[in-house]
Amino acid sequence: MSISKAALSRIPRYLNFLKSLPEDGPVNISSTMIAEKLGLNQVLVRKDIAIVGNGGKPKIGYNRAELIADIEHFLGYDHASDAVIVGAGNLGKALMAYGNFKKYGLNIVAAFDQNPKLIGSKIAGKYVYDIAKIEELCRKFKVRIGIIAVPAPEAQTVCNHLIDGGIRAIWNFAPINLYVPKKVVVKNEDMAASLAVLSKMLTESLQQYGED
Amino acid sequence: MSISKAALSRIPRYLNFLKSLPEDGPVNISSTMIAEKLGLNQVLVRKDIAIVGNGGKPKIGYNRAELIADIEHFLGYDHASDAVIVGAGNLGKALMAYGNFKKYGLNIVAAFDQNPKLIGSKIAGKYVYDIAKIEELCRKFKVRIGIIAVPAPEAQTVCNHLIDGGIRAIWNFAPINLYVPKKVVVKNEDMAASLAVLSKMLTESLQQYGED
DNA sequence: TAGATTGTTAATCGATTAACAATC
DNA sequence: TAGATTGTTAATCGATTAACAATC
Image (cartoon, rainbow over all chains, first blue to last red; front, side, top):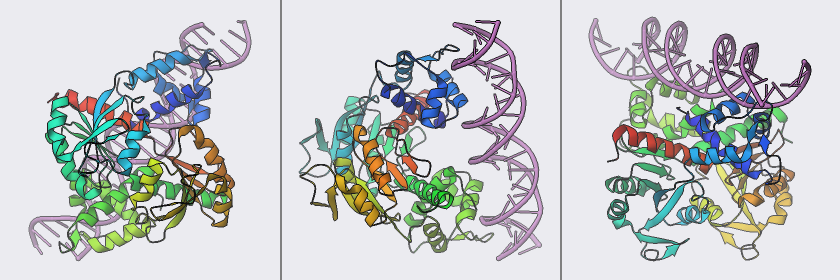
C-alpha cells in the first residue's frame, strides 16, 4: 500500500499522542478521539490508520497498545538504520544530544568535523572524526544516511563526499539547495520555509482575531 | 492574493537560488532556468512568482535584482519581527548562533532558561533570562513570536507562559503536540515527521535504483 | 435491538500540470 | 519576422471530506 508524504508526516503524530495517554487508561481509542485531539478530520485519521495498522473494531475503536506497535513497526522504529552526522558545531551537537533519534529508528554512529579541537573527542557518546575520512568510514560501515549540519558554503562539498562514501539519503540542515545524482534522496529541513509559513499564519491570525 | 502553504514554502528556495547566482552574471533569469535548477515544473514557478513579484517580460525573463527585492519584501525580510526563544541548551544555542534569522526577518531579542548557570549570561549576543520572567518580558516588549526549544515534558508549560505573555505565534521544536487557544498559531518543526519521510524516500530509492 | 464506530465508495476541493494565447 | 518566454485558462491529478453501509 502506498502512502503520501502528507499522510506519512501525520503518522508520528498519532504515535506521539497514543504514547502520551496514561498506561492505565482505557485499552481502546477511537479515531474520533484522535482526530479531535490533533485537530484533524476523523475520516482522515481512519484512512491513515488503515494504512499502518490492521484495523479496529466498530463501536470499540482501536486497541491502543496494538496500534502503537503497528505504527512503530510501520515507521521502522523497531530496526534502526545507521547514520553519520557531519558538523559538530552547535547544531550538530544539538542533534546528537537530542537522543530521541534512536527511538525514531535512527542510529547515529559517528560524527565528522574539520575542527582539530573536536576531532578525536566524543560528543554524546559518538566519536568525532576528521571530515577527510567521511568517504572511507561511510563505506566501511555501510552507512546509508548522512546528516548535514555544516554552514551553507560547505554543504555541497560535504554532500559530495557523503555520496562518494555510498550515502543514499541526506538530511540537510544547511540553508542551501543541494545537487545530487538521481538515486540519492534529499530531505531539507528548511528553516526559511517554516518561518515563511509561520509568519503568514501569524499575519492571518492577527487579521482574523485582532492584535490582542 | 492568497497563497498556499506549499507555494509559500517554495518562495525562500527561489530567493536562495537567485542569490546564489553570480553578481556579475546575466541581469535576467527565466522561470525555465529556475524550475530546472530546483527540480520544479516551470509553470509552477511562474505562478509562484506571479504572486510575489510584479512580472517578467516575454522572451527576456525576470530581472534578477528586482525579483530578489520583490521576494524579500513579500517574505517580510525587510522588516524583522521580534521573537524570544525559550531553552538555551544545545538546540536553543544552535538556533541563536544560526545567525541567519535576522536575514529571514526574525529578530531574536532574548532567551529564557531555567538553569541558574545560564541566567544572566549572554549567548550569541542575547541575554538569557529566568524562565519565570517570560510573561512579564514578552508583554513589556510586545513580542509576538515565541520559539520553544525545551525538552518535550516542559514544552506545554512554557507554551502556556508564552501565551500569557501575549505571544501569538509559536515555533515549536519540542516533539510534542501543543494545545493552544484558537487565536494562537503553532508551527511544529517535526523531526519525527521529517525522518519518516526521509526513510520512506530512501526505501523507495533503494528499490528503484538498487542497493549500490 | 439500538447506537457507536469502523471502513469504503463517491463527491469535493485545491494544487499541479498541460495547452495555448499574448508579447517582447 | 520568428522564436523564446511570460501569463492565463482549461484539464488533470491527488488528497481530503462527505455520505453511508457494515458490524460489534
